[in-house]
Amino acid sequence: MNFLGHLLVSGNDPLVITGNFMGDAVKGRDLSAHPGRIQEGLRMHRTIDTFTDNHPIALQGRERLRTHCGKYAGVALDIFIDHALASQWHAASGGKGTLQEYAQRMYELLTAHAHLMPERTRRMLHYMVQGDWLGSYARIDGVARALSGLAGRVPGGSVLLGAERVLTEHLDEYRSEGLDLLGRLRQHLQPHGQG
Image (tube, helix red, strand yellow):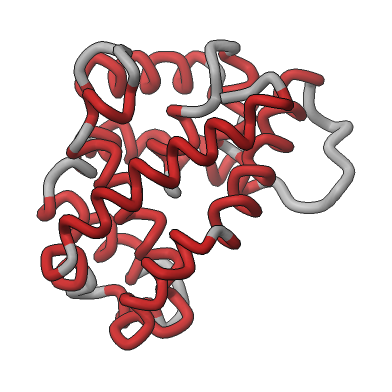
């Protein structure tokens, strides 16, 4: 899952949410440069990625994308999962208000804690807020825009262009699988006091 999914299972602690959000930009095992609750969010991010990347539901969704996206099938799937959650917000959120209200809360929280983020994440957050990435995931054109942005930032990323057609061809499956995966992830995180 992408940003929306990660944020949705992060709980209520602003530092854990911030750590989870910036997880892709922090490499290595030594997290000691970050405050304790940020470290917890970073570890949560890694737990989420490991669980979702290896779950049979995700493997099935990735396989549908393989012909179109090749090695970037998992990248496209992460965005498709966020689409599933955003487009079925009431079912996914468990009463966190509207998607727009939630997105605005997250933008404000993350901006208030941007000083704790790596420079790369701070720059990305600016564009995320400006383009309302979290809200745009609910629409197919928003998914297309996210894929296009990624295509320009990764080597050989042009295979991501047009992948939203795979989403529209299998819309019911991706939406159902996204909610199913979210539920299973929440169960997985529960023993750790997360989710």
